[in-house]
Image (tube, rainbow, N blue to C red; front, side, top):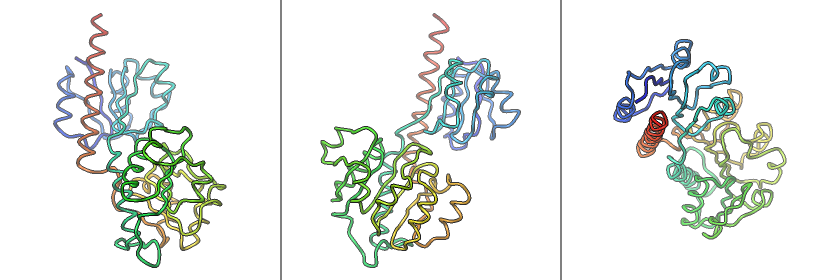
Length: 302
């Protein structure tokens, strides 16, 4: 069993999951809402730190955690942690991935259908349209992009993708690979799927996107050139869709500008947020923790 476990900033963990973690600890888990002085002091002598995607841990803070062996992140993003510093100290950093891929793909198609059929606050064209036959270009071929490609193709959209590395498995399903410039020229809809804060569209890219297109993003951070996006949205026939999470991760200036535009749809919900995804992230998170503890205990005995 573990001697000391500290949990900082995790607010939505189900009680049954917390109980499974507690059973592997010889002392009560120390819980903090925020990353303050008391939380860091407690973490400095802990074997395990369980934390959220929103709290940063620099090399200085990691160096103060003399006993730390494991950082469990309740979510996908790890850029808030100095991973190189953790690796130098032999600390395992474990995040949770692939827990909301289906939810995000379904959300994207829902928002596109609403915009095409005029059931939401922003209409795509002057007349109601069908998505069938429209060209969807996906930038980024990770698990969400792949889920979206399959579901969109089943609805009759023509789907292509661009990625830094080609994925033959996707192409076997009838999804076409296009170089980025060509994808932007052809697409009626562009869906962005890059890692957090990784630039998906630069200033040159916006010159290739045809008028009357939709850009939809569930990415974390400003993954496009802000000035170019602003100019692109000055043309009233262009549309941008953001889920609540993507919007919340933008800088305040971008939030203010985008929220004032009539051709921008900001969804009131986060793409990933369903009961199913909440259950899945919790289960993956605790299972990863249990695996770490089993290996850690076995290593100490050997």
